[in-house]
Image (cartoon, rainbow, N blue to C red; front, side):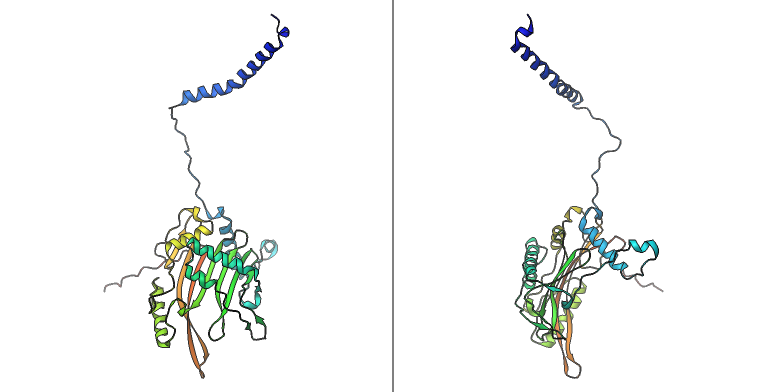
Length: 331
């Protein structure tokens, strides 16, 4: 029988040959796997998962660079070729006259604060105060310039960190910073929060001056130990806990560092430290008192609550630790 006289049979045989050739590698690999099944072999260097570090995260690299450039900004400029490698760091302005007002950033600021409250990184009471735009101003400075306070003011540094501030007026008409929020403009991660609220905003003592000063002194002593006592009516500013600090690390995209923990013998009453990332998160809550008026005309004390939450680079050697007390030597 001649195949050319039977084209269909010839085509079928060719197709069968192609299938056999194509299946041969799979059959060989399946046979090899079956032969190796159940057999173990020791390897010289077993696989170990890589340990994350601060260099793996853009935000920590930016914070480290900002800290280095801020420090070098106060050192003399190098001479020769080294001067060409020196970067000029320009920090963000912090006064209302050096910042730019923008109503567009009001929604941005409110959304960021509400997201922080929803994640647990910021207490809802503090977020409500930070988003309170009841102050309409205007504030008039010494040269007659007016600033409206129903919108935030912003400034950026040369590394792309943007600072948003809400200014307000106290009962004497003095301008103060009610909320300061610093974010990385590329990732949107918050690296610093600073809030200042009236002492009676959370139910503190505000009517009796003597009671106010006594409460402020007691709160200062309590803040030194990391505990804030409640005011006379049982309310006090929310104190940050460990869960809030973990939530703050997560919103910054740093939870995967995996070793966030409360540092031992730390001077900070509320802190988390990551040795893998060489990063430190600190939170503090304390009252402070300012004096207005003059000595001759009489001074008035004004006490406010301050809350601060910050992410910063910090090596293990730079981590502040409490020095244990040395018992006195016996004669």
